[in-house]
Length: 202
Image (cartoon, rainbow, N blue to C red; front, side, top):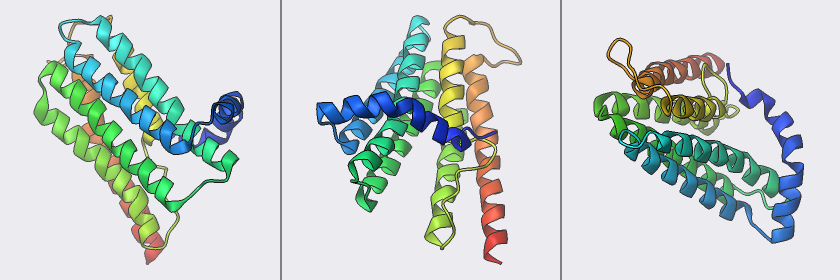
């Protein structure tokens, strides 16, 4: 179910934005910092949205912008020939903070901290297993049930839906359901990546 396999399609769509960024003199690191700032703003919007549902829609827009910039920084680095391990490290660290900002914001907005903790740990373990595979000599793992691109699309769509759907089912609102989804699927994806990495090492 991962959207990461379509990254080459996104790269083609990014071409005008890469050209504009290059003309403006932007660096990939600067784009990464702006992206995480948008994620922080989205998290704050989600945290405040229970009383102001329109903020869910604003947060959803910020999530999609974060995702767009998250692929723009890599494309810009390739264009400028500035790809480096330091840039890769910065990008991954900021992506993890962005994940935390978004999920904590969602949990805070509906006062569901226990489910939020489960969702955050699931997402972080998914990302950890993806890079840990590389640390032990395998290729970096992006696959699994839900990758980062999938998460951002699901959070964005879920946030937009939460702006209009205020009811609950089985005691969970749209946002509560999102958190449960990421808690369950996040850990399953992490275990899936762990399983495939272990098989490749044996």
